[in-house]
Length: 305
Image 1: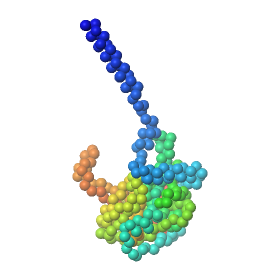
Image 2: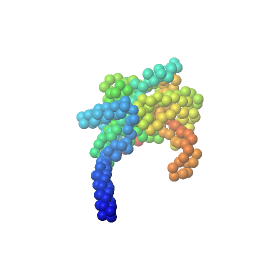
Image 3: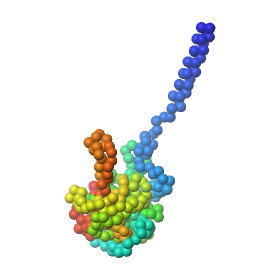
Image 4: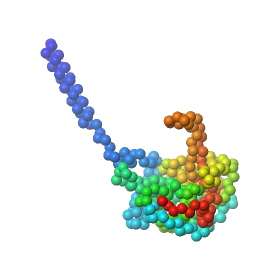
C-alpha cells in the first residue's frame, strides 16, 4: 500500500508539474512597445469616429509623402492676413439644428501628424478650428500649432476631405490665437464673427472632444473674465480635450468666441489625487481677440517655435 501510495503521489506531482509548464508556455509574450504606445493614445470608441481618424491619417500620410504639407519647423514667418475681412454677422435667430447644419461644414478637424519616441508608427493628434475665408484661412488656438519641428499639420472638413496646411499667417500667443492657411481643393465654408457676447446669452460649441468628431453642445455665457492678461469669457456648454480651437456660436450662427481651456474644481483639491469633482470652469477666447489678429492688430507678433 505504501508503495502504491508513493507511486500515486508521484504521478499526481508529475501531472501538476506538466500543467504548470504548459501554463507558463501559454502565457502571452509581452506586447511590443509600439502596441503599448498605440494603446495609450486617443482611440475612438465609435466606429464612424475610428473610420474618420483612419481616413485622416491615410490622406495626410500621402500629402506628407508627396511634400504637399509644411512642417511646424517651417512656420517661422508671419506673412500677415492682408486685413482679411470675415463674413458679416448674421441677424436672424435660428433653431439649434439649423445652426449645426449651417455651421458644421465650417468647423474643421486640425490634425498634427507626429512620430513619438516609443514606436516606429506615425500618430495623429486632433483638435478643432474654424474657417474664416473661402480660400483656406482658418483659426485655431496658438497652442494647437505647437510641437516638434518635424510635425505636420492638415485639416479635415466635414465632407471627409483633407487639406494641407502650408503657412502660418498670424499668431498672438498671449490671446492663444493662431491664423493659418490651408490649400483649398474646393471653396471652404467660412463662419461669420460677432463681438460682445453677453452674460446669459445662449451659445453652442461644435468641436471634436477626445476624437468624437463634430459634437455639438449648448449652454450660456457664464461671465466675462481674464486668463493672464488676456480677456476671456466662461461658458457652461461642455467640451473636452480635442475641443481646443472650436467655435463658440450664438443663436444666429455667429462665432462669438473660441474654446481655449478648462479648470476643474474639486472639493478636496489638496489630496495627491483630487477627489469629488464639483465644477468645471470653461474658458474661451472672445471673438474680438480673433478679429484683432485677423486685422493685423494682435498684441503678440512672435515667431513660431
